[in-house]
Length: 205
Image 1 (tube, one colour):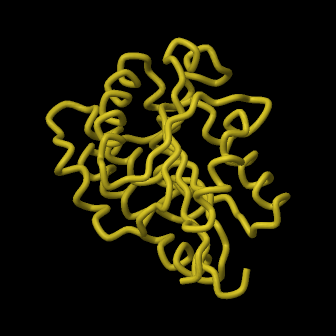
Image 2 (cartoon, helix red, strand yellow):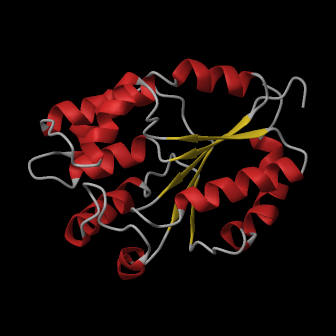
């Protein structure tokens, strides 16, 4: 893998769509195939900003909506040096949530435009591939733990899903839509996809 740039692959979707499970499976599958791959999750809850966001998501504190949107973006920006360093070293990063979640979850609130929500993340490393996990909201709501965190409300998730669908229509994105399979990563279509996509995604920098 010397001389090759790693790929930045983002998994997005509503809460409880299976992103964390599929991210771990994809990292394992890529490593088994001989790629260097690591998992990154947002929000990154171990930093000072991340700890504040964790308390917010767990409903332990309140933060004004504009302010918390900027904090979520700042949490992504503080990981940019790590992201760039890993990619330059040839490590493929599988990212569980990214800027798309930040935009969708704030734009789902009242009086927020998608354009405003996008601005703080302008300049973040651009994903090579976005995998959008599609799951019926009724099925997501039945998964264990739904409702424990702040945004896990059926009506709110419906609004967020609408925002996600708008974002994923961006023609400049390489976005693939999948229905998650819990037994195998994406029902294994990623193996076929990597056969054609991997050459470009993991090409020499």
